[in-house]
Image 1 (cartoon, helix red, strand yellow):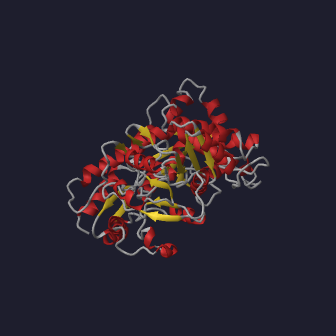
Image 2 (image 1 turned 120 degrees about the vertical axis):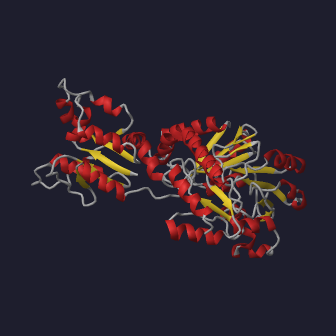
Image 3 (image 1 turned 180 degrees about the vertical axis):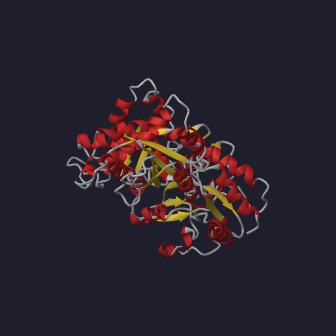
Length: 498
């Protein structure tokens, strides 16, 4: 994505009622992955010029959604040299430099002044030449495009927090918890500093302690088993379903005993585990089920949203999740009033607490960011599904690749687009070396074979499905802004036989 900041003469040319070269160039440029920006520092000048009957109004350009307003920061004015003869142009260059990614200024002024070393400028021929240099590269998670899309909303939210100054437990935190609870469909939502804290609080809320056992998948993040161990309990692993990579309910009965306290069911790669089966088994044995909705936030299971499928659910708002902050964040969800009261105590220090807990809160700035992103979240989920469907179509006839298998009762948010191939490492190396295409392989060493859990005395072969998956799965670039042209390039390379 290339950012193009429009100088005043370019704006006037675009709004002119007479056809001109600038308008023709703009139409041509709109066919490329470009985002256009109108600097706020030019608005007063432009409003004066546009009073003429020869121009359309400024709203004509801004209402097309092809052009965004670029905020001007007060701090930038102090960075302009006192002897600078073109302070507005200098300010434009500094404001332009706040945009993530490649940014240039489109101007007809041959003597334009840019005082930021990263910001170049020029006419339409210069813009065409620069566009060729900034062809999109595939990204596993494209946070830049998302930020640019939501930038005005994000800025407004952030500055509102700076205005009221309630950086902890501000009104945005309460509003976010209310909106998340409504979105998921639970009575209670409690945000936390991160997802690890959310899991810790969930386990503490149900009373997990030393000597207990908690069932969890070995094909998972370290945190899922680490937190169990930190409480003095024992992680007990159960193999996964070969199609969804989620916990296999058919394996549960064999490991449940009088020490078992809970089952953690993680929803991997965007779709939910089989919670009807898991919950039924847990109910028969008096166990609590905890849903790990970290990778499935927004997905559904039999029409129910992820986050309400167990006694307690938790999720992550890390930047690379489907709904992410610009830092760490997490949340717990529950419909159980007694557990809600315990979670509330466990996540904060208060003199009248009856439980020993910890201090874990989502700060107000991160909450404000999530509120801005939550508005666009449903649309992004639709775009993710479209990207996944394109992958599915392109890979349908590649016999060496197994595409994601989504259960008929599930919808997936495709946090990752995960394929399985027998020569995974070779494919990953080829993608990177030949076309600089990034990919990731999560859980390459299952938890039962990690050195930290050697004391559990599991052996290689204990969980064959998880071990096979750890050697075969590969995550391709996946995000709502991925272009079909890039997907085609990726799949063509896979089809080439590497």
